[in-house]
Image 1 (cartoon, rainbow, N blue to C red):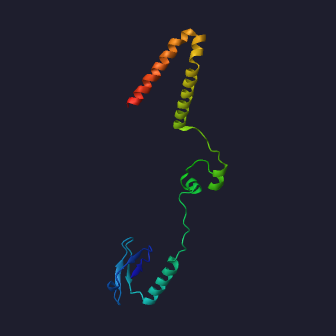
Image 2: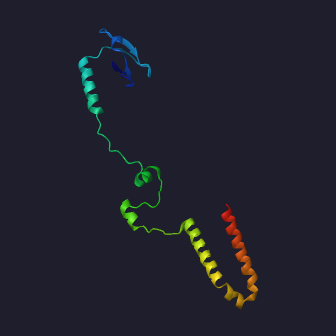
Length: 156
């Protein structure tokens, strides 16, 4: 049984068997008010229960997507990238793709460049030595170093 204090309006749950037909003296534990409580008729209880059932029915809330940019900005004040009102498909088509070689692209370019440079140097070695005789020793040392590096890689 649910009883209310007439002074402070605090509500208490009391077993039905605790209050008899002749009534019982009860005291509010909050304000100290004393009164005689008589059993509540079942009609009133049914009315209260029907009122509770009517008031406890709530409309289902629409589920919010907690990961949208607008929600995160509004709720938490987070700024993620540049917020735009365009859908993702439109922004993906308008953004420019940055093209670059990347690390391995640069390595491959360097290898091709050096191979072509040494090929041209090998073809024109005699002409360079005829025009500039002092470069003969440097070219021979360069080819010796290349031969040593080639042998060290082959021995692995």
